[in-house]
Image 1 (cartoon, rainbow, N blue to C red):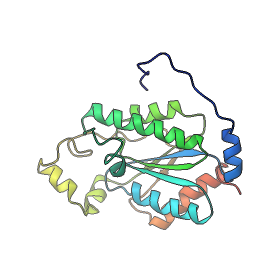
Image 2 (tube, rainbow, N blue to C red):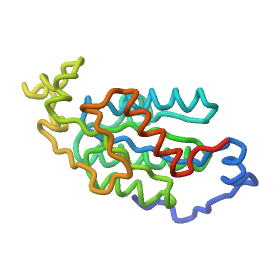
Image 3 (cartoon, rainbow, N blue to C red):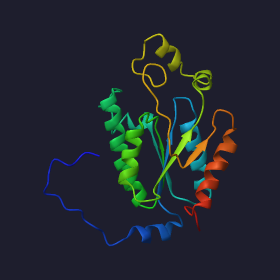
Length: 203
């Protein structure tokens, strides 16, 4: 992650600790970093899993790629440099949400391992849960209701991941969900089970 331009900065602690917030919420803050090709089911899985947790009384929030690019990252394109900056900013936002005790779903293609690893590095041990939404390129194209892959193959969308730009699969993901063949309910159950087994959910 980049260093701040100003060196005259001091981190200010509040009087409410992260542990206090987590105890009140009955959960451990974490960032569930969903990565995968466009159409792999990242956002769909995030939305469904969040609903399950919210219905159980947990505090959650989704950081979605399309949503963030309409506001915080509206000035960024899809060049390798802009993709890296996109993920850097999201990583910092996710870290703040995690510190608040929230279970954060981050749904971004995030095609480069180095960018995902950079986010992992700024998080405390156990706070970053990389989840690979694994679906083949063919499956993602079959599901593409927006027609993005067809446009990319025609050259109408430059630097499109999986077609004219690379996607680097995770090498050390905490969880791999076969979204290409599993039902949504099955995928959600696998994700929730991982959180329960690893102590992120209590109360």
